[in-house]
Amino acid sequence: MAKPVIAVIDYGMGNLRSVSKALEHVAGDRAVVVTADPAVVAAAERVVFPGQGAMPDCMRELEARGLRDAVIQAAQDKPFLGICVGEQMLFEHSEEGNVPGLGIFPGEVKRFPDAQMVDRSGARLKVPHMGWNEVIQVPHALWRDIADRSRFYFVHSYCVQHVDPALTTGTCEYGIPFTCAVGRDNIFAVQFHPEKSARDGLQLLKNFVEWRP
Image (cartoon, rainbow, N blue to C red):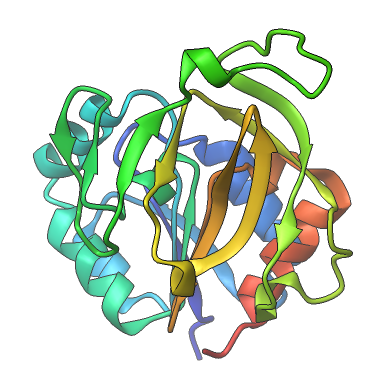
């Protein structure tokens, strides 16, 4: 009998090796497959949608490789994890390049506002937001066995804003408070990189592998 498959979507823009290796570490009896084949995505038990780089490039490559419809369908009917730009692309629009996203969630992706990029002591904060930061959790199955305010690794200049509070599953502060994790039904998506976030990142991936929404 074939192993259940976790498909990691390859549209040329994700941190694929790190994501797949981290998943393999926690996948148990499941196979982790990096794929650009819509049929493999459609047949998979669960799907991971990573991303890095500029939103316009990510959207263009997703279209060019014929994966847009496969992503939208997977987000409708199977456990689905978005990572970094893979989270941002689920929303309606990004001001980075003034491009539409997939529109799965309502909301806007916007750059950190320069005027507000100061810490509580008044020191300037750099953009991109790069490094470890605390995540304040909203209860969700994927936070199982992860302490509230655990630190995860971020690399980004843009973040989702105007998010429906019902979608928010985690928040963070970097100059401004922002939503860094969202979830609804079978979808969970994070701005940070669990594959680069040590033990707690691996625990989140393990929770995703075992999640039965």
